[in-house]
Image (tube, rainbow, N blue to C red; front, side, top):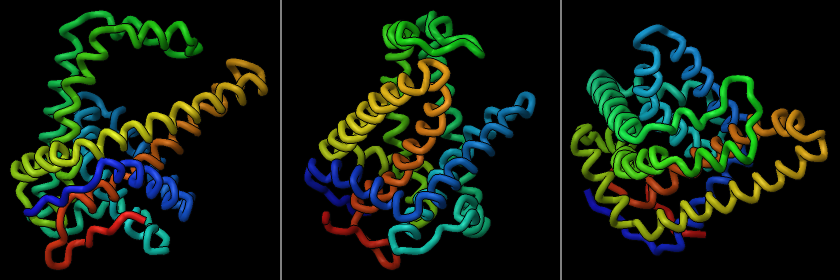
Length: 263
């Protein structure tokens, strides 16, 4: 397993490639992400185990969206079957992906416990049906539990960033995939920093435009009408870009997808 070190500016290239590839197949990429979110919502309704199952499917869904991005990048229409690719690679790959999903659920549980160590985060969240106001957002941003959760989630995210691709396409064991993913993220931390900055700027600009549009459509009601669909679309674009960061962080081996040069 050989890491591929890329310039820090490559992070911005990943953002650009994600947005460009999304708009090559917007219906497919957006539809696949909506299907994943719908499946998560339905599973979360199952008593006792629903939430754990939905969280455990995140690595498999991430792999499916990576595979869909590869299809869209090559000019092909990604089919819904891409979402379940993780479970179509044979018994060994399926067991490994299930184990990876279980590890992710445990990791997220650790994050939630860390957030609970500082009380108040849940109190700052708006009640169901309440309008989200700037004051609520400001109060939530000031909650120490939220920032602690984000800090604890960072290494978890790094460990699972490349892991699904390594397990499925490289045949790496779940445990080793977490280690290699963490090392790859650290080695290319400059590129990932610019990647985060690029997406942060994109989301901020989109948020400002949505705020203006919501005001034109009648304030809070108009904002609610456009905010949720737009957030899902931007999240779909973000997930489209993940594949490029994974592809370029490891040197190609055998039949693995080749790392590309930056355009």
